[in-house]
Every structure is written in structure tokens, then in C-alpha cells.
Image 1 (cartoon, rainbow, N blue to C red):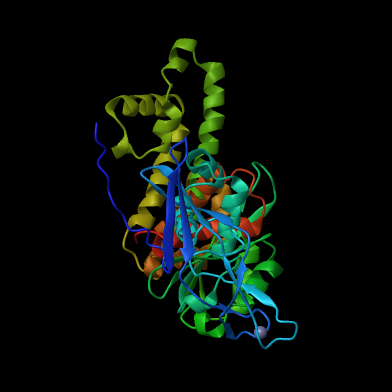
Image 2 (image 1 turned 30 degrees about the vertical axis):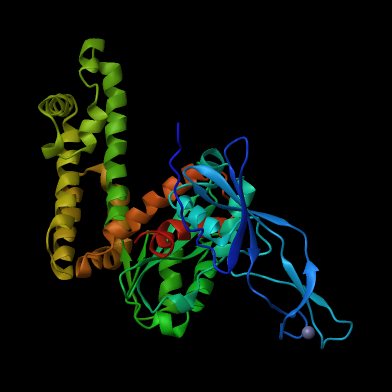
Length: 416
Ligand SMILES: [Zn+2]
């Protein structure tokens, strides 16, 4: 049987292929030599071309060919400086690899692309590269903090906290942004959500990037609001509507839980069984429910009439956020809803009514441009998935780098 052969370019500049070998495992070992005939003296910085023998052979992992690992072997040339005292020698450095790395640059770029929406442990499983080596690649290519010079200006900033351990009170704050070219950006991962920490970050945003900033989108946490008002006067603080919704929906859910508990004690086992799926039915909109789910929900309302009222009021409230109201109209509509809740004496929304009084201005700021929603929510989902993938990342720098790769890597290393 004859094997078809294919010639493909190596695509590494300034080298000449000396030898191509295949190992028993089918891996390729390509021995190359550099065609460059000089180096830069590490002492005086001048170009030197007095050849002074070879250094130690290095082996670098390169891009696989047809799913077979490829190794590049090179014996670096050394050059001697005629001018520096004692004539020091310098090893030639070629642009396609970094002497600190066991991989070619092309391979590292490829791994970085692979790391987008993935994890270092995945690299081990899929490409046989250790987590440490993958972290090393990240550290060589991804900065540990935001490079302000790469951003023209930011127009929207988001402050969002995530708890790193389940049920833990240790929060880190993700500072994200939409820049003036409408790109999503990760600006920082702050070690805690204290007002002073947030303030320190905001104060350090360079003038040029801060110039276009119009809005800061926050969760309802006093420290954020004060940090923004104290450092960025004139910038609008907006509470994301999804944070608002989470708040009042949680209130409604509490009532449901309490009522279900009562029903468990009062209903016959047979009737209680009819409430199977009631939780999901209660959380969804009426229009989204199947006929069966609607039946379950109606049965629940029949057994616990207060839940019917809570459900209706919750949906009415969501309806206000759906409508194309301006800020003043929204204030009026929300105030009316609050009044109505007091009249109905619906306890489940007590906490939300109080929060609304405290955050009325920032909550209704949403209606000015209605643009906050998808942004923070989308980022949150990304972070949740990073946490799942990179379990045990309690290091803010590493978190920053991973979020950066997910958000910005696609544009820089991927196929944007
Ligand atoms: Zn020199």
C-alpha cells in the first residue's frame, strides 16, 4: 500500500528544517536550525555576529499536525561581543519562542484560544498539558490587571459581587464595563466589596477612560452607591432590573414556601400530590405554562388564595419594567403598586417595599436608557460557569485573567 504524502509549510520564520522524525507513538520531532546570523549583546545591546558555538539543545512543543503532537528541536547559536569587557557571550533569541517557555509562541496562542470558556484542567485532559503549564501560558500572555491604554473610554460600568464559596460571606467584586466601542470589558476583580476598596478602584480610573462614563450599574448594596457618588459625581447609578426582580421574586417565593408547608399539613396526601410541580409553575409566567401546569397552579390558588394575589402582583410589577415608560412615569407606576400592596396587606413584599423606598431613584434610573439588563446578567452567567470550571479559584488575579480570556480573548486570540 502506498501512503499519500503531503507537504505543508512549517510556518516558522528564519529556520531551516534539518530533519523530521516520527516517534513510535507517532509524534513528530522536527529538528531545525536558525538561519539568523547574529544576536543582541545582553550587556551593551548592540548587534553582534561573532559566532561562538552552540548552547544547549532545546525542545519546544509546537502545534499538532493531524492530531499528533509536534516537537521542535533547536540548538541555539551563541555570539560573543567584541566590545564588552571580558567578551561576554549571548544566546541567540528567535521571535517565535520565548526562552522561558517550553512551547513555541504559536502553540501558546493556540492554547489560549482553547482556554476560552474552558479551564486549565481541561487542557490536561484534552491536550496533555499540565495545569501548571497552562497557568504559565496565561501568565505570559494575559496581564494581571487591566491595560487602560487598550481601552478608549468606558461608558457603562458594572459592579457585581460573587461569593467564592457557597454560603460564604467572602465576596469578590467583578468590575466590568462596556467601552465606547460597545465591547464588553473586565476591569478588575476586587478582593472585597467594602466601600473603601471600591472607591480606591474608581479613583484610579484614568481621566481619559473615565471621561465618557455615564452610568454605573450596581446591585442594591449601600457601599457601591456611596463609593460611586463620592468618587464620580454626576454619574448615574442604576440598579439592574434583574437585581430588582430577584428581590421581589424572592419575596413572593417565601410566601409560596410558607403556604406549601401549611398545605402539607392540612391537605390529604392525595390532594397534596396534585401540587407536584407547583414551585416551577408559580415561578413562571402564565403564558409560559403548559395546560397541565396551569391546572396545578389554579389548584394551588384554590387551596391558598393569598398566593393568587401574590402571583398577580408579582407579574404586574414585572409588567411595569417591561413597559416603555420614562423615569417619571415609572416612578408613578411603581409608587402606585407600592400603595396597592399596602392596601392589600401582602406581607411577602414588605422587604421589597422598604428597599424600593431606599433605592427609588436608582431603580427608576433603569427607565432612562433600559440598557443594563443583558450585560450584567450575561457576565454573571459567564462568571458562574468560570466558577464551575475553575473550582477553587480564590485568587483575584487568576480570576481576572480567566474572565479576561473569556470576555476579551475571543476578540484577540479567537475568530471574533
Ligand atoms: Zn556587548
